[in-house]
Length: 148
Image (cartoon, rainbow, N blue to C red):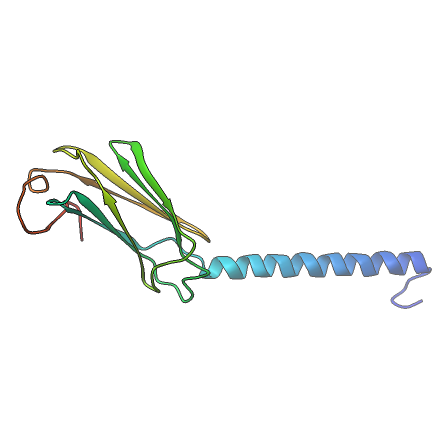
């Protein structure tokens, strides 16, 4: 027998152990490799288009293949209560995911929280507080407090 095996049963055990070790090593490698390219969204931009009460959300999430690696979910909370949750099966483009939500009844002091989740790994949360500048009826679009 080869490799110091004294009988066929011993050789079979060693062969099986080698195969198990190889499979586990490969699984660990591919898991680590996948996590290398997975990353949470980078930023969330939130604007309230006051005249029409539309909340505009733009999630920065640079990817190579938006069909395979994308922002899978956006949740919008007002004062801690979930208002809407939207799921996606791909990203709008290689840099961003866009969403628009009709937000009637927002008032001064309301806290709007947007949470965006990557389909592979990670999430980002951004909060804004509605102030007097946001709830005016100006014809122009006013960015929400807390935008970059």
